[in-house]
Length: 128
Image (cartoon, rainbow, N blue to C red; front, side):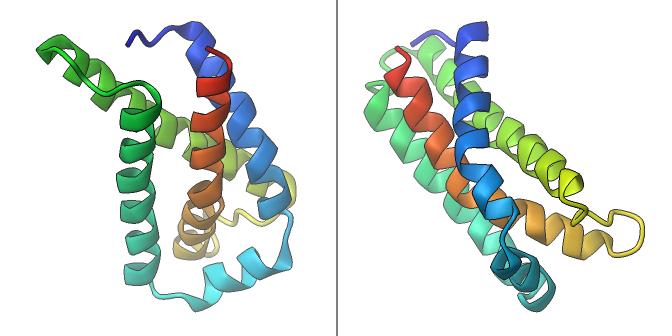
């Protein structure tokens, strides 16, 4: 279970595939304004837990102690990169107002990243 540059590229592509249509939807913009921060943080926690399960199942999980570090790195890197891509896409459609409404921007980013991180993991797995 190695984690190399090619994996990062596959994760970025997978995240873009799912994040763009979600980031461009009025429903996500409205949910980002309406949901409480606690509920959005539950989305983030669910994303990380399900992402960890997906990585564990798709990459046959950590078999040695050194694999545990790679496993954790893969999960956190996938989610982090997906958050960055979600933020960039929201910025591109002018829905990431970090200075005027920072909490709304963060909530929208987390909501866009929710499905995108799963797509990123699947594309990474399919890419080998």
